[in-house]
Image 1 (cartoon, one colour):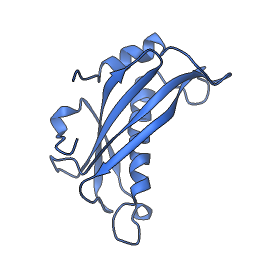
Image 2 (image 1 turned 90 degrees about the vertical axis):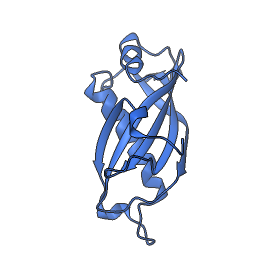
Image 3 (image 1 turned 180 degrees about the horizontal axis):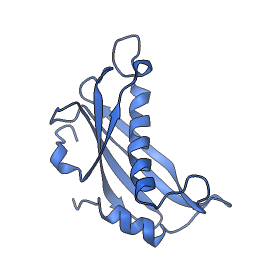
Image 4 (image 1 turned 60 degrees about the horizontal axis):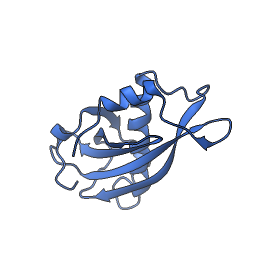
Length: 143
């Protein structure tokens, strides 16, 4: 996804960087990128009414993630996190996320993570609930 552009992502969340995000090298530390991924996806699900982080009986657990870094982000940049669903399975979903710095058209980082849906009470895998599946389909891309 090195050549990812904004037009390839159907949903965006703007995330301001914080002073504490920078490391001693003067750019956002690599682990913070994963926080941006998590924030963008979960904000999308919460805003669409399909994730109740306190009372939901079914939740998504991250079971796989990765990130490739192409150029630096530094405070006080604003990150625009683009998300899309690359694969929608029975009990899992693979998100692809690209991070764009300020008004840049090319991604400065891109990655993925996989949610497996589980019943909160038992931590056992369950099919993605129909309402969640319908929301995820709105940002799914066919590759």
